[in-house]
Length: 304
Image (cartoon, rainbow, N blue to C red; front, side, top):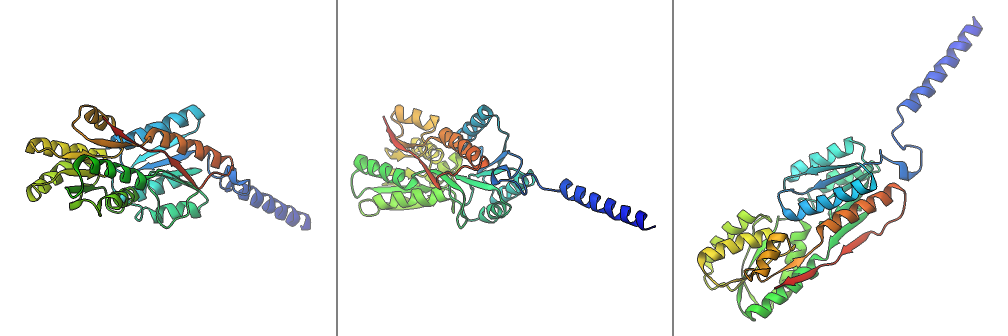
């Protein structure tokens, strides 16, 4: 009887040990570089904007070249959807989360959850407020907006009336580009209007139409991105007024308008390079390598 009991105890111990091994999370108890399943998740603010399409394509090409699995989620400029997207990527056991926030504050809880689960996080183009991410990859939005505004001042002269078309409220790009604009404009220009058009071309046109009605003496416009700038150009063309427009992002459509002399200038970022850099950085994090906390991507002014 004692032998039977002893054998039963041994068998129970063996099954318990086997069970422990069976439910071990991938990478648990191993080196940090093995956390997750080796895949990467990219939560992008919207794929209804050429800039972010280029960013996602840069990431996809780099991931394919490196042979790593990449899952891309389009938030559609909806903060609530982005939070759900991130939770879904977490459930897929990704090793690295790359996030391009719709709203830098609203995305923070979901990103913090990823961090608490040991997932490495990279923010791209926009910051995540209040969360210590592993790496931030972005253009110098403040400097870019400042040089664009300084060029606008050269074209229209000091004291001229201008309008500012702002991006999505709360987005770090909106905050930073607004700061750069006002740093250059507030002392030398008459900022007659500052309104959000949510980085959208159609909204840029409608907002510009309203501003033109209330500010007939307008001489210049600084838009936080090219989509809004292009929308503003449509409204200005319909009004037959001579108003200088400067945008930000150097999308293909905007650069063509600059070349044609219809748009005054735009600021060139390199979204494909951002996406590529994000993937390369993610691969280093998966391997347990140290990376820089901030990786700036250069910007430059594009004029005719």
